[in-house]
Image (tube, rainbow, N blue to C red; front, side, top):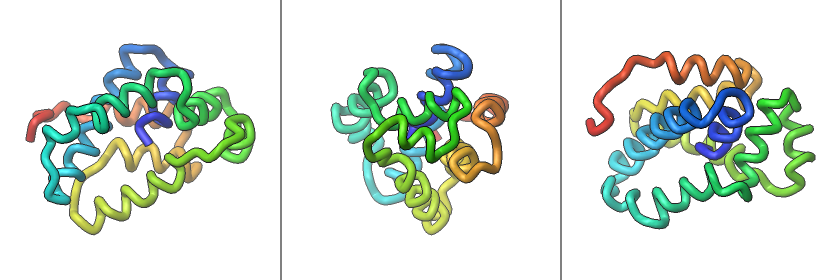
Length: 140
């Protein structure tokens, strides 16, 4: 899901905003993991942070490519066709939001990404929305 946002940001703005967006989204994921009884330190290894870095910046991610296609103005169906493979972030985003709602966990970045995927806001509006969210302690 974060790789979709990464692709959106890469296609619209640039690396500074892209990194900020991913960092804020990473916080959403961390809150979900903790709410499920996991440890934030688990996320700092290869299967967490390492995987996220690769899928957001590695150049081979279907999800990031999908996000870039959306940023270029393609529809969801057109972007899926352009990727030509499964875009796991599409169903995962909705599932993560359902889980967050059940656990009463605030995930504003994931919600914003979902708004784009549902056609409720544009990719550009999502970036503005996330980047204008109030700053808060990243470790609470």
